[in-house]
Length: 186
Image 1 (cartoon, rainbow, N blue to C red):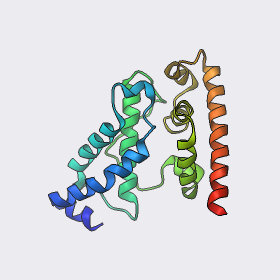
Image 2: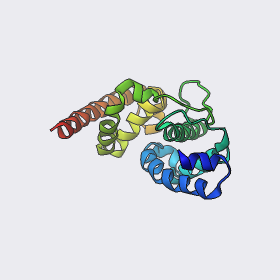
Image 3: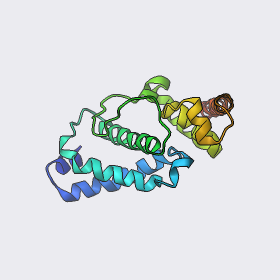
Image 4: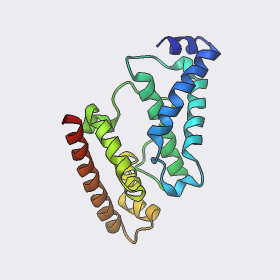
């Protein structure tokens, strides 16, 4: 909070400290979320860094609304940037305008859907999937792509083939989350 207050007041060192603190966290969080067909256009670490630079240029407009609000705001900005990259690559999710400057002071839709405590299990299970499975899960659950869009992006012969691949990937994700729940509770 003190760093954020100093950065909003124009303290360059505080801004550098915030950047150094959040860049590795967001790079780790964003890893694997940029679909393979978009990676030749944008590299995930570069995308995260560029997003942070853009957000930090306008940091004075951020209103702190509680513990974790700034990290949630940064994560949402990165997710919006990923969505924009996917759209720019020609694969369009549902028609929704995303403003990467909009403050997000509540849990993400994903956090609401599966609960804050389950996010860690979700993230761990997601990382345990094969890369192609992880991309399908992210494309469907986080980016909201249609099965037809996913078939085209993943090189599947039809929307039904993409739907079946997603169904299998989500089943493996659920198994992984159950395994994670067993290891964290026991």
